[in-house]
Length: 151
Image 1 (cartoon, rainbow, N blue to C red):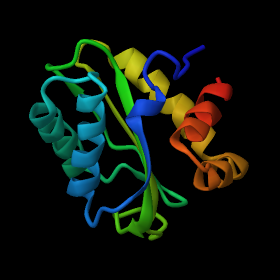
Image 2 (cartoon, rainbow, N blue to C red):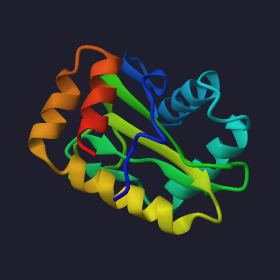
Image 3 (spheres, rainbow, N blue to C red):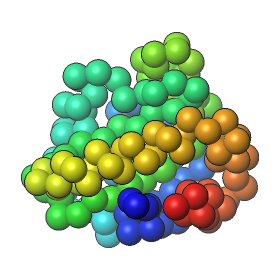
Image 4 (cartoon, helix red, strand yellow):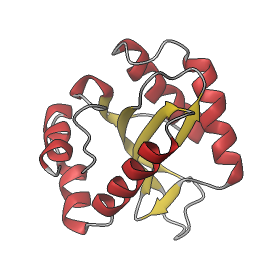
């Protein structure tokens, strides 16, 4: 079973963030990861994530997006979570603006693990009760606990 405990902690979660574009959300997520000492090359990872976004939007519907990439600059997989104060357009398949972002980056040679994590996250995010709890979490610690307790 794949879990989030090894790739996520509360320092890499931010709630009620102001951002007006996909680029700004991704940059803010990478700042969280850099300040949490999870990444050392945010610019490289930013370009890898944006290259992935060019293939197709990583919005999955219901106000959620999962921007992600495999990168040569990564030694292990990390995740940041951002909940926006005001949803933004992210080219979602259902046309809904996005307010919950789960940003993941991992090493290029770890595709299988990356896909397992994405699959686990997608199952969790399709649960309406989980989405409601994620949107109402009062603090980043509450949101982290919500993700980690679902493992």
